[in-house]
Image (cartoon, rainbow, N blue to C red):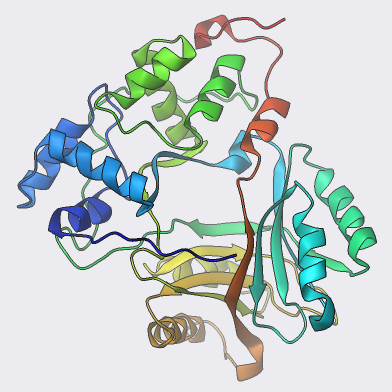
Length: 368
């Protein structure tokens, strides 16, 4: 599968938008004015109307992968896991087709490794369903799978900053808007389920995106903004903002660095590596004896191989503050081909975790 060529030239205003709003965007009825005001305070002369037009243009061109709420699927329901396997070179395309044929497989990458050359994500509505899918994949391909579920998340927050205004990406526009109280409910109400499925692909790039979502759901704008803000506080939404297409920004190299860290220091090392601003994902995962010795994953991105390797060296330098890193204690698996990249079936995972009827105070209608 091709990574795709994005025909879009980022000017100064575009770059300011990309830098400023990856970390957040106002959750108010008309969000573009406070967002534009924050840019004007940083010397970027832009109106709310122009800001909205630029966001819409970048979404349409594919320069932004999404505008809106980044839903945290893990907190919505179901389960997902990273899985590795060996696809024999003479059967690689056949095995890839077989694996990709499973609807539970969301992302699948070919990666540089002498043995485990195929890496994919399995996403299921049933929290216990990953092993069932892997059994079926093994039967279909004749190849063993190596399940590497997340044991601890140290960081998830892909931020891709570019040269231009707001170079630190440190604008905070989260102050305006509702201030809801988080709940301790694990399950969604039907109304919340409808909201999740409505916003999972992004917000409309209209002047009043939250009101338009509310109209589509038959809810009030206030309920939509309050629920999204509450989801943010509860962890069901990681952030609201722009998510750039990192390939369009020139970040074409992604390296999955893997490390065999002594178990007694891994929980100290994790936060230190996660603090590096170019590390986009950082997890502890299980080893597989005799096949896979690594228990720590850190994903980095670079605009070329040289930048990627420089950043990997920086990760190693941080590691070296905690333990004696030898050359055979780590590896980097660069992706060479995207084999499949689809959604993670969030609607099915959310549906399986939805109550039979809504809490009347949540604003949702009862279901049959």
